[in-house]
Image 1 (tube, rainbow, N blue to C red):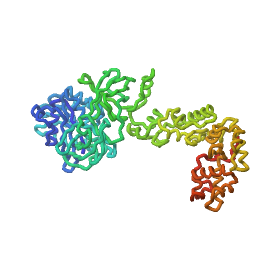
Image 2 (cartoon, helix red, strand yellow):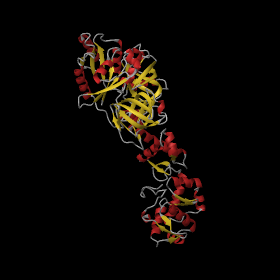
Image 3 (cartoon, rainbow, N blue to C red):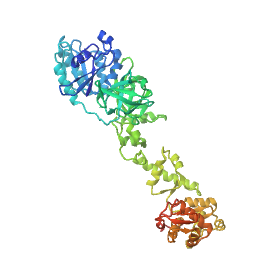
Image 4 (cartoon, rainbow, N blue to C red):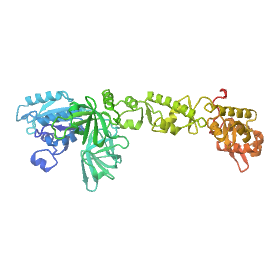
Amino acid sequence: MRVVATAGHVDHGKSALVRALTGMEPDRYEEERRRGLTLDLGFVWTRLGADGEHLAFVDVPGHEKFVPTMLAGAGPVPAVLFVVAADQGWQPQSEEHLAILDALGVRHAVLAVTRSDLADPGPATADAVERMAATALGSVPAVAVSSVTGAGLDELRARLGQLAASLPVPDADADVRMWLDRAFTVRGHGTVVTGTLGAGTLRVGDRLVTGDGGSVLRVRGLQALHEDRSAVSGVARVAVNVHGSGADALRRGDVLLTPERWLRTGTVDVRVVGEPVADLPRNVTLHLGTAAVPVTVRPLGEDTARLTLARELPLRVGDRAVLREPGGRRMPCAAFVLDVRPPRLTRRGAGRARAAELAAMTGAPDGAGEVRRRGLIRRPDLLAMGVAAPSAPVAGDWLADPAHWARLGERLVEEVERHAEEHALDPGLPTEAARRLLDLPDRVLVDALASASPRLTVRQGRLYTDDGIGAALPPDVRKAVEAVREDLAAAPFRAPDAGRLAELGLTRKAVAAAHAAGALLRIADGIVLLPDAAARAAAVLARLPQPFTASEARKALDTSRRVALPLLEHLDAHGFTERVDDQRRRCREGSGSGGGRESNPPARDPRAPRF
C-alpha cells in the first residue's frame, strides 16, 4: 500500500477529485456532504491498475480554520496530491499548505488542476508549478482534470502510479511510532484507533506503549483497507483494536510506540528553516505527526533555538516538525531536531556556547558526535535518540568517547594515589568512593577503568596502585612486614605469635593494611602468613594420603595447632580442600598445583623486588 495526502485551498475540489478517483466518499459526516465542505480527515483508497498495489488517500480540509487538522493528516504521509482550481488559481491556503509541505520535507507530489472544464487550466498550472518548484517538492508533474466530465482522470491515475512507484520503501523492522488521527469505540471490540503507519510492522498480539509512557496496550486486531490482517507493515493506513488500561483515553495527537525504544522529551534544540529565529513569537505550536503541542521558543543562534514543550513527545534526532503561530498570522516554518536530550543552560555564557555547538550539527544522526559531546551514554539511550552506536560498549551497555575515557582512566589513578597518600594504613580506595569522585553513573565503569589500567589492581572491592606489593604502606609498616616475611622464609607455616607482632609494631590496624595491600595473608585474628601460603599449603597437603586428619596436616606443614586449624578452615573456604567427615579432609582436584579461589592472591611476580 502507498499513502498520499491531499492539499490545497478550500473549495478547489479535493474531495470531489478523490471521490472520482476511488468511487468512495471521503466526507464521513452528513454536515460535510450537505455543506460541500470538508471538516475533518477522510480516508479512501483505490487500486492502481488491475494487479497494482493499493493507493490510499488522506483527504484534508482546505479551510483556514482547519489548518491544524490538515497538519494532522499530512504530517505522517510521505507524498501529496496537490489541488489547485483552474477557475480560481493560487489562493491563500494554497500558499500555507505548500509552506507546510515544504516544512515537512515532502518531496513527492502530483499537481492536479481541477475544474478544467470551467476555465483554461494553463495559467493556473504554470503558476502552481513555478511556486512548487521553489520548495522541497521541486519540479512536479501536473495534470489538468475535471471531476465532473472525467477528463484527465486516466492520466492522473497514471501519474499517481508513477508517484507510488517512486516512493522509498520504509524499513519493516523499524521501531513503531504511529500517530493517531482517530479513536473510537466499537461495540464488542472496545477501542479502535487509526493512523498512518510510516515504518515498522504491527502484529496481532504486539505490546505497545502510549506516548506518555503511562499505559501498555495489547493489539487485539488489525485492519488495513477494511480487511483483517495478522500483520501490517508501513507505509499503510491501519486500524488497530487495542486493549488495556488507558485505551479509552486515546485521542487524535496521541501516539503508539514500540516499548523501550523511544525517548520522551519535553526540551529539544532545533534548527529553524524558513524564518529568522529572532522573528519567531515566544509561543508557537509544534506540529509533528498528528500532534499539536504548544512550545516556548528560546533563541540560541541565528537559526537555532531551544523549544520547551507543553507535554513530552517521543522525538528523535533528525525529526522534522512544523512551527506555526496559532491563528496563522504568518507562514509556518520548519524545525529540524538536533538534540532530544540537550544540556541545561545555567551558567553565564552557556547559551552562546551552546549556539556555537549547535551550529556544527547537521541534524543527521551522528553516533560518534553524540558520544563525544556526552562523554558517556548508554547504548539503548543512544538508539532511542535515533542514533546508531559508533562502537562497542566499554562496560555493560555504556558507550564512551575515547578521549573522555582516557581522561577518566588518568583521573582514577590520581584519585587512588591521593587516597593512598592520605590513608597510609588504609590505602585501598573503595570502588563506590571512586565512582562518586569521578561522578560516574555506574560502578561497572570504575571496574572497567581499573581493568584497563596497567597501574591499578582491585582487591576485595578496593583499588590499589600496582607499584609492587605493599608499596603504598608506611615505611615503618613495610619494615615490620619485611621482618615477618624473613621469619617465615624458612618455616612458612609457623606464624609469628602475638608477642613478635607487638615487638614489630604490627597492630591490628597495621596487619589489616598489610593484608589489604597483599603483603601478608591474615587467616585469623593475630595469625599472618605469606601471601601465597594457601597455595603452598595445598601443595604440601596434596602429597599426603587422602583423606587426612588435622593432626596429619599439622605435622606435614610443620606448624602448631594454633595455626593449623584456622589455616585448614581458610583452605576449605577458598576451595583448596573439603571435609569428608568431622575428622578428615581431602584436597580438591587441582588444588596441589595452585587451584582454589584464593581471595588474597600472591605476588604477581616472585622475582619482583622486595621492600
